[in-house]
Length: 225
Length: 225
DNA sequence: GTCTATACTCCGATAGAC
DNA sequence: GTCTATCGGAGTATAGAC
Image (tube, rainbow over all chains, first blue to last red; front, side):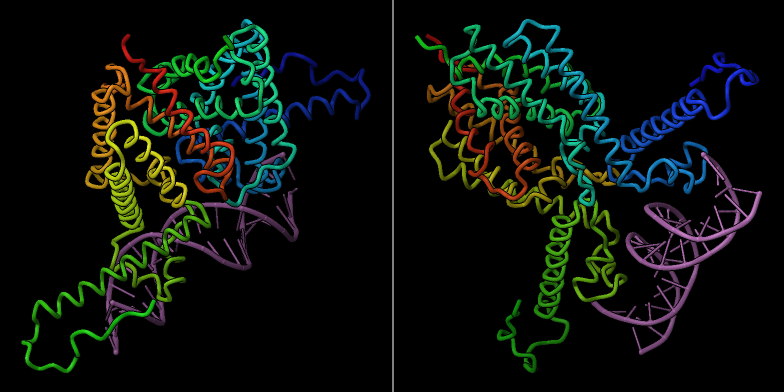
């Protein structure tokens, strides 16, 4: 958590006051604090449950008094929304990268879902916030929800690639196929999270069956004879 | 909510005082109150989230003061445990009946899982308490957990029946097959609960794919040639 | 078995000084 | 942007009268 103070020595009088440089530094420092708050909030949710998050506890761990946090977030719900939004974006990024690194089609789909599962198991508290809605008084904003549309599009495109490559039958190029695939990954993840809280992807009784489930897709969408 | 007072007229002096009859009546009345508390608690969890349950709110809806509830439950966690236990037993009963009414083997397995899914979607708050552990400070007692062993045994037996009936290959008669089946039903349910909170079994995008998934089991455990 | 009264702890949020 | 002080409310749980 060491922060670099080497650049831009403080005493330099050559720069005009109120420059964008100063503002940038302030803005960056502010952004760092925001990220730190969100990291602490994630820790608390992991330990106490998603519902156990409180600004008082965040303040305690950050070493400030609770009112100070209101300079960064207007309410507890705003913190939840920032956590939701950041989680959504990171999750999307992880899946996109994994798919880009794999062969288009079934390989990319499998790789993307597996990377998604790996990330979600490594960030369980955020995963619960994203998919289980455990805080009834929190509704994610429309902006925070936007990346999930992209997630579906990625999977839809991979299915289309798989059909074109002759890996799946033509019926796999449909919205229903995305639902079926989502059921498979959701089943693996929900069982792993509920019953094996300390294991990561690849360990235990549930996540290892995922590759097997993906192979079943060929049976679900058979190639025409 | 009318309660029958017809039986056992109050003034009858033929019976000795402090008879088991009197105690039975008291015990039954007490049990009714306990069930009513659990029903109200379920309503609250449904509206406010599993974590939103509070004895104060239960007392408010029951029309008593909070301290009165401590005559029935020693703590809030004891209420959670009673809810867990009752849910576990009802859920097991639903599945057992459905399986008994169906042809042994794959039909019984499918019928049991479908009945389970139907019941869980109709009792979502309890389902979350049973499977998602959303209250970190609550650990179900060993006694409350016991019925889940029976659940696994039921499914295991149905898989063995299916193998014997020639519906599935011999590898389906194994513990791993139960995990695979559990992933399928968990996936359907978690997607339905997260994304279609107002729909029941058979409606929406996810639960209708369950029969299709069960058909895939044949592909996963092919019959020997 | 019900109540009142109470002790205790915690939280979200705001006002205003510095 | 930090703090102190405070409001207003929530909750669990216990003691003791009736």
